Amino acid sequence: MGDQEIQIIDFEEMLRFIESRLASAGLYAKRDAIIAILQAEEAFLMEKGVLQEYNE
Image (cartoon, rainbow, N blue to C red; front, side):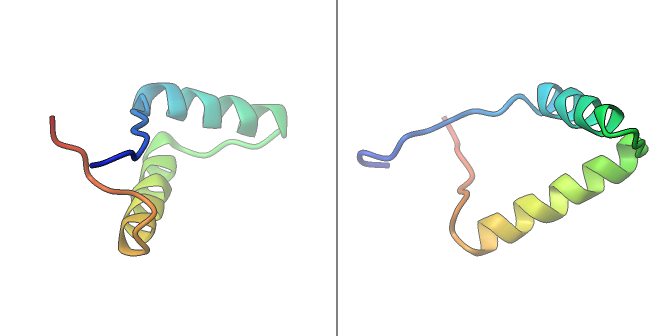
């Protein structure tokens, strides 16, 4: 990996954060919908080379 910085994101923490932000805006989305959006975003960012899968 060289000098690249690795950040591990806690998926559950991210879901709670998104749910909180939506609630603050008076919006609601089912958790399944949020997960589907996050998975699509992850696939997009991996395709663009912004994210890489990390294996210890």
